[in-house]
Length: 339
Figure 1 (tube, rainbow, N blue to C red):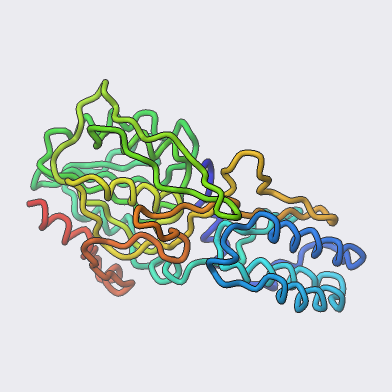
Figure 2: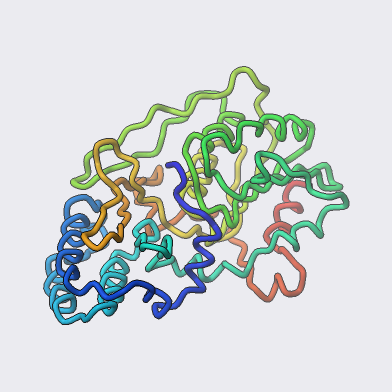
């Protein structure tokens, strides 16, 4: 699931009002054509309409009328609202000159966007956290001989090539905390590089499906036999800003007996355009593009990750007030568990 999310784009989305979308000259003569392409593309490939109980035919009727009456740039709002009906962070608009526009974000993401701070995390360590993996990973050893690794992103296939170096330096710790709060996704290849250091036998992939519940199958994750496996207790920190590949990682790791998920429920967004021969990006007549998720992943209990998220085994609620008071109570709880 390469390059699913970019954190700066998501933060920019949260700061962007609908009025900011109006940046192009009027293109009213292409509004209906744009609408038809967008509606039909979603109707053809989006796999969660039935699960989310979305009546896409009735939505056509409502939005076709809005598209017909929209004048010029008013159609931007119509298209924005149409995509938002799917309530899916993997469905977005690529606008000429403006970049990526996300119509929707999970309420859990919004809830937790300010309830975590890497600056507060650093206050729990006597020494400076070390950077690795193109600065996508920070790591340190707590004074109680507890390892800490923060993985901020799984983006780009080569990003975590030197994760082995990080874990090798933490092998003698009595426990390990892996922090994927604020991890907004990336590639399954990078997930596998991390998971492979903790499993002793092949780990079956969770099930994925395209529209019509057609299975999407991937080979099991293989243990990395050339490297020593980390066998001591591991706690994975998650919250509402753990997104997409970050959620897949948490669910994979949760299948390992020595691993505990701690924190709060993840965002619930793992429907992306990964199936072969199914288009995910659709150009509209006006030059805009829309991106549609075509394959959704299910947890090991069979429920889609979308909307449901990944639940912690130990729920520790953390708020913006805690962060303002320079406390990370989720991290504190994890440290106490591993002492």
